[in-house]
Image 1 (spheres, protein in one colour):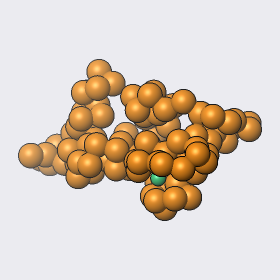
Image 2: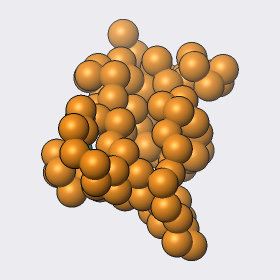
Image 3: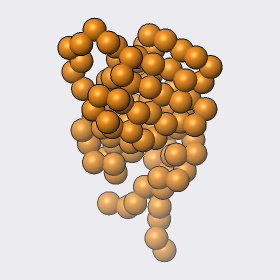
Length: 104
Ligand SMILES: [Zn+2]
């Protein structure tokens, strides 16, 4: 299988798009920073703000399960797919071309 141009995806896929697919609903928002229930771990506590996202930077961090990263890594963590598979899956769900790297 050819490689996927991750740099291209990182530049083009936004955190909002991935959060949309995960049907994430922020419980609080302050500027570019959103907080809510973490889509990566089952939260039993009433504190539903362990997950924080910076939309401007396109980074997420969970204070409970300590996962963090960019939108692509969030999708990989949420779907439990390896990064390569997650990238392809994400492109399909967003209805976009996979930016394959073709070696000549
Ligand atoms: Zn978490």
